[in-house]
Amino acid sequence: MATLYTNQSSNIRKTWLLVAVFLAVIAAIGYFLSYYYGSPSLLYIALGLSIVMNVGSYWFSDKIVLSLSGAREADETQYRELHRILENLAITAGLPKPRLYVIDDPAPNAFATGRNKEHAAVAVTAGLLSALDRSELEGVLAHELSHVGNRDILLSSMVAVLVGLVAILSDMFIRSRWLGIGGRNRERAGGQLGAVLMIVGVVFIILSPVIATMIQLAISRKREFLADSSGALLTRYPEGLASALRKISGYPSSMQKASNATAHMYISNPFGARAAKGLSRLFLTHPPVEERIRALLGRDGELR
Image (cartoon, rainbow, N blue to C red; front, side, top):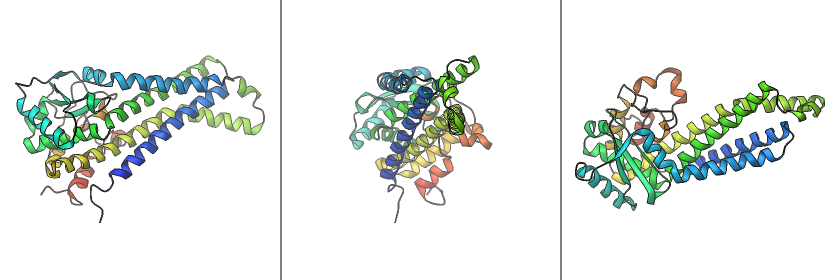
């Protein structure tokens, strides 16, 4: 019988499949641009940019995210118990203890960042520390350590960069269309087939930012389910994480420095419970908390 832990390997395969689709979208955009402007070098430029931007995000993602969130390093004396919990969980998980940061924000939330397990960091908000008991806090920290162990912190940074690159390429194409720049091949394509291919290409490149965003959402949501199950395995107490998720998701207001660029890195939607209603639910970077709790505790989703 399937349990909440048996889907981990499946989720990993599906996530990397989505990343491959992401890279295929960028390659398709580059190919169409090279065809549209009659310059094969544009394909190599698009692929080169994706590599350069990912290398940059690999080395500096933690510094960028911590700075954007207003995080400060957690003093070992002031936050002795928090350091102790994180260290014990890291030893259990067989991971180096990440650097620990605190964000002065009343909204309860947390995230992990860094390029690998040796250079990882975990940040929690002041609101999280005041709202959760020890077992709930252990569940949250185990979830974030699972992101580190599952290499999600690098994957999420890479995906964020690819989304930005797709948006940049699409915007450049749309602006050049308005200015009447390029487009030699569309004039010599000839025939109905050439016209159809050109129309399809234009529609695709205009819609590509939406496609990229949907892929990002799919990846982020799958990684959250995987980190939930891995965190539950680490603590052997899924009820703690489930209770924490319920408290965090119930906070009504947005975080003070919440942004779309970093929203997918938090354990729960940083824009507050009010943002998870209506059609906006379709564009959230996290799966509905009810589904996450149900996956942790069983079909009824009741804490036991």
